[in-house]
Length: 501
Image 1 (tube, rainbow, N blue to C red):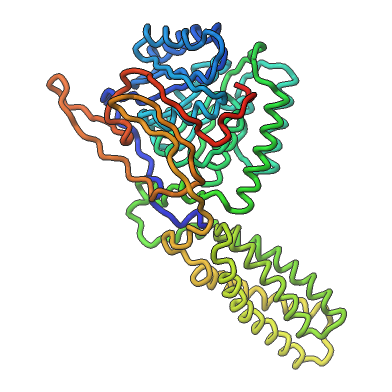
Image 2 (image 1 turned 90 degrees about the horizontal axis):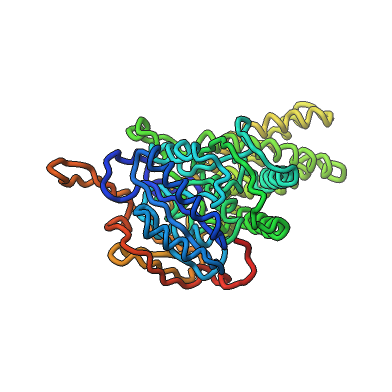
């Protein structure tokens, strides 16, 4: 599967229109579990903040996932008292499950969430979502570990948080600084494609979503936050940490085997409007050159080591042929995965066969160089042989890159991008006429075709003036009128008991 071979899978980002067309621009989700005391003050404070500071229409959605206290009653009361507040209930625990269900059904173009304790200062909310509204970024996260963040919390939680992020950097090569801060946002067009790829339903949901998005090349905006720890948090640290480590292993394995269809979430070339008129620009050339040089350098070292070993018991021509054969197989496999982004096993045999043809050309160059050296001197030194081979390999390397790019791994607008894909389906639908949430058990990931371009903005008359109506997708054809829920498990293991909030 190619990460750069499906341009147009996601449309280019655009600034959302400033006109208020009735559909909320921002939907802030508050996942709760047994939060009867904190829920009311949290929602009232958030609503007051949005009312006075947020320039767009908004909604606050309370996602009650299987509370056993009076949290559902508090949520219903808030919904009845405040027009911008909606609520619904899931019968299974899991913050990730609650977020995926609400985000999948929401009609707002910007989707966010925050923890009910409001540990994060709300002044960071507008900076969080502004890059998504402007079209600059795809996701945004609050970071407690940024240099300018101000954080008040105990040494134990500080150590756990920093250790976890070090694990992510070391194992999954994550570049974002804070995976677990309960303060994130995502564009809805990205969420529609990204959420079905996220398996976790608990606290690892955030990390998995961010890792997949980052590996697919989406832009993640980080906002330094002021954050005060909640000493009464109900999160089970040990169990959550164990589940997170299991998730790191699962996602790392999926990335290593190429089972994640990252090309489905990739942005096309030409996100910048200035680039959209550029024609015939090679896609990913700079990245491929860097990757090829790194792989080539390591392959050359590997080749020279093998040549020196084989030279101990054979002639120079045989040692060269054996060393080049072994290193060529390793080089083709490494370039296939790392340089040209091909994942999965589909076409691997064909690629190796073509790589051997390229190897034959390299063998001819290096063998010819050795033959010329032996003709020039009857007993060349080992260092001279290595110098000649390095020069010949440099020439062969340039030719190898050109053949790899044009013949072995050509960019054919997605023709080779299906080898690593799995089956999928969207896990939630939303009927605007009757806002009932319907979820089902998804099959493995199966692409449903490229995500359609965002519909054009349709003008409509309101009080004698013409404004612009934004439609984020099919779910934006109406507004929520009530919060009746009909839910089934989102994942096959959703009925597992004992998951933390």
